Length: 259
Image (tube, rainbow, N blue to C red; front, top):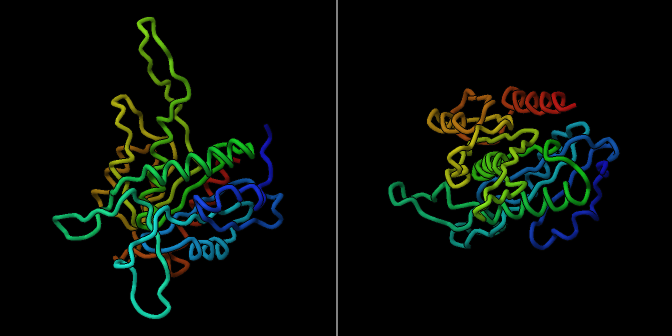
């Protein structure tokens, strides 16, 4: 069916399970692409909703999603004005070696909600958009989720073929999204498909401020990876036009390449 222009009402069913903020292009009827924004550890959807408004990408309907679980009070800043923060993991695990939070706590719940309910359930199933219309953008832990979602699309089973002996095997669809951007978030091992015959994902990736080892892993799983390293070393959101330019160029190239 032809894609329908999204409206706020279409997403009301997700209000309790996947809180979010929406930003529509002007006019909404100009929508040609969908951008899903995934914030970092301890943040909320509000900051990335503001980021989407500041980018104001033409023809792009942006959905900033809140993390699927709240951070415990002990991990939140203390004092007046402190606000709640959220994360994307199935759990909060400590790395015994570093004493820091494990960067790969499992993302099954986030995958099921973002990819299953938001993308497949609403955008594709209800509104008629294609997976190739959707881009993912994430920072830190949200960047890891963005890469993981793009990675798992290549082995989403479309058909289960049953042989004469009654055994079944998945006919892997090899879907792609419009693109995935990660700032500082490595591809989590838990979201790399375990299918031995898997091929590299054809979804295009922009990896920003990641180590050489993390870049190598991404390149093992994706065919087309662009790498950006800023002049400063710290992992943060872009602060100026120079840092923002390659991200905007990636978005523009992806929107142009898919027509």
